[in-house]
Image 1 (cartoon, rainbow, N blue to C red):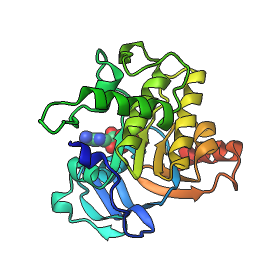
Image 2 (image 1 turned 30 degrees about the vertical axis):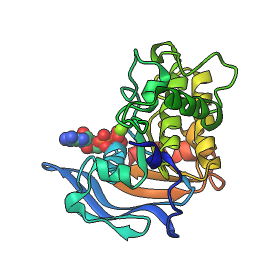
Image 3 (image 1 turned 45 degrees about the vertical axis):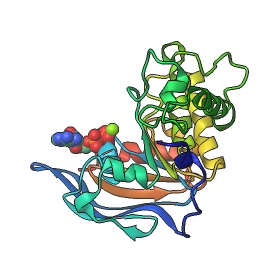
Length: 264
Ligand SMILES: Nc1ncnc2c1ncn2[C@@H]1O[C@H](COP(=O)(O)OP(=O)(O)O)[C@@H](O)[C@H]1O
Ligand SMILES: [Mg+2]
């Protein structure tokens, strides 16, 4: 990617939903992983996606981000219907949809600044990679997008020296820097210590504050309840409830999910 691509894009036309699925089904052979899914994310909305293991959460976001194609149904991005015959991860990227995976998205032994520019090198007017500029931008991401100030982390730190929460921060900061309008987080706090989880929740708040939207998949109900604008519950491939955290306490939500598991 050249420097000019990193500059502000022209403002997007007005839209209501950054993404919307309509009547989406997904089969893996005979297994139906998604059933008639209607799901949308508004501008600058943080949607918590919750449900038991195997409920279909990851499949839903994979369909939405072009990793898997749906067996049937329609997908809209910024209210425009996509032609699903050529929807792909690459196209989702081009549409400013970024997914942050639990791990593996960062190169362990590389300094942080290199991690921000993997596959998206900034070149100078001679076509050479502009290291100084990349480091400057990486420094801005660290300090401004994700608030790593005075914690002893610099653009030259290696990923291997970061805590789990900090790694999530780097991945989220990278997505924010690339002007993602929707950032998808699939269980970012798995295997993190409590203090690290706090950091991730703070990153989610930063996504909100920066005007972006987020889909936050989280098994810990208290955590997702704390930061989501809306919670969507998926059970055995179907969306069974949508609630506002204001209207349902964490305890009520927990009981509701336990009850679901006892339904036939
Ligand atoms: N690539 C795949 N091939 C076959 N079955 C799959 C595949 N991915 C997911 N599944 C099945 O689809 C269902 C939903 O899985 P998943 O979306 O990963 O659930 P969750 O993320 O909510 O735990 C499960 O029954 C799972 O076994
Ligand atoms: Mg999953």
